[in-house]
Image (cartoon, rainbow, N blue to C red):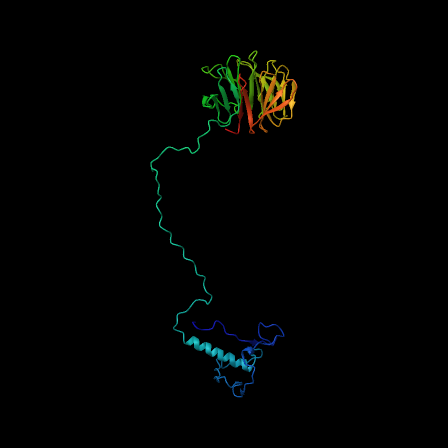
Length: 376
């Protein structure tokens, strides 16, 4: 009830401990004597309480027939008994005077909940563009290539560039750099490109494991070899037009391909170490790098014999002859263009480029074109 105390303190003594309930054994009962003045106050014999306290009537016996039994709790002392009776009377009086008051909840204060804010009215989106449909607008102009791999210069002087991921063979203007599609996907997928002595062109479909060929731009395309996973590099012998091709990564073998497409490929050698980006020299030998052995070699196509030329590369990716007794090598990991003298094997770094170099082509006038498969 409103205005009533939240608790009333009473001290009781049980039979066994002779001390207030809840007190530690041996602890003297606390009778709130600290609230009394430490002066001698005359005590009334009739009330057994200080004379300054009003005499209170004794409460009637609520259970007349109940006898006092041994062990019943009794007040600890006469003074505190009168004080407890007075406190109880005051508490009962307060309760009786507030019976008409509306009951209140627990004295423990409730935590106020923060009301959720009222959402602000939505602001209409203001746009200066038309709401009608428009075709997509490119933010960054797309690259013409999707990774450049094989390179070659044909008899017309065109720079040809192949892409495996782009599945396209491109024709690039060497003066302006403008590119246009020469052979579209999927037939145009090319890891390497080679030009024959009569102007014919061959290229490898790396992911398809096929070698395609056509005699000129208007001639139909033919498949000269298939079922060779990882068919990577190829080159014509300028003396007689023989065609050679190698498997790398998905295979490791060197083949001679029948240009008529009537005979199966002839195996020259296996497990060389990744014979990549090679070229046929005027002596009929095949010059190129061994990707996994960090060296450049020459291979005799008649019996597959390997002769090392230079080593110490990080990842040699391709090699071309310049007709002056030099072999030019691109290193995929270091990004270096290295000149190797065939007579001595001496190496000279001619140019430092970005890593991920893949192939190169040397024009008749001596210009060297290099492809980077990661930088479009």
